Length: 330
Image (cartoon, rainbow, N blue to C red; front, side, top):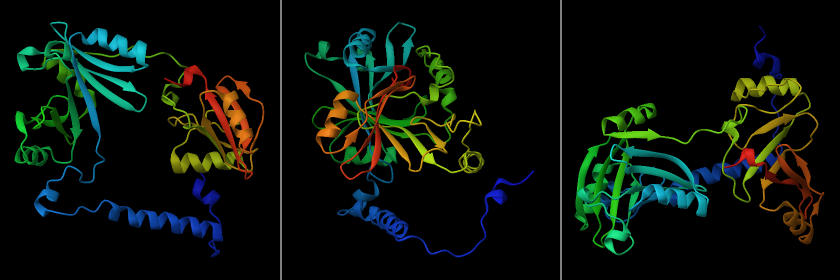
C-alpha cells in the first residue's frame, strides 16, 4: 500500500517563505520565549520553592454546603441554568459530593455533615463555603499555609477520588481544600472507590444524539462553533489529515470531520479561504450590529445544525455568525 506521506511528498527544493509567514512565525516565537519571563517569581526563595503557582494553572473551585443538597441542585439547574455532572449519594440519603457546571465553571456542593463540623448557612446563620485549590505540591502548600497562620482542619492524605488533599482554615475563617492529583490514578475506578466509602455514583442518563455526543458542549457568545479548511483536492486532504491528525471522514464525498470534539470542522474543496463560525445569542441582532459597524451580512439561513449568516468585517475579512441547534449545545 502506498504510504500517504510518499504520495503527498514534494520535491525537496528549498523555498523562500513568504514575508507574511515569516512575520507570523517570528511573533509566535517571541510570544513563546517571553511567556516564562512574565511568570518569574521574586522575593523570598524558600517561599517561592513552596509556591502553589508552579507550572500548574491555578483554579479555585467554590464548594458549597447546604441543608438539602438535592433541592439545591434542582434549583441551580432550573433557575440558574447549571448542568449536573454527577452526585455521590450516601447510604443515609445525603449527598456527600456533587458537581454542577455553570458555563465554563464548576461548582461543588454537598449536604451538611454536622458530625464532621460541615454545616450550611441555615445552620450557621450566615453564608458558608469551602474553596478547592489545585496545587503542584499539596504537602508543601499545606505546610506553607500553616506557617502563615492557617489552622489545620485535616492533615494531608491520599483520597479515594484520585487526589492527595489537606484541609486548612485561613485566619479569616474560610476553609481551603488543597489538592494535588494522584499520578497514575485511573478515573474508571472513581465509582468503585466511592462505593468502598459508602457512596453510590449516580450520573444523569445521556441523551441519544446519533453519535454526535462528543460534539456537544456549552456555548457562550463569541465561541468558535465550526471551521472549514480550504483544499483543492478533498481526497488528498482526507488522506493527509487522516494520517497526521487522525481525523475520520465518514463520507468520502463530504469533508466533515466526524471524530473531533467541539468545535467540529471540515476540509472543503469549494472554499478558497478558511471559514470561522462564531456563536451569538441572537443572530438577527448580531447581523444588525455587523452592518451598523460598516461590515456586510447576509440574511440568516437555517440548517439542521443551527442558523448561520455569512459576513465580512469593515476591512473585508469574511466570517460567519452562528446559533447552534439545541441538540449541539448544553
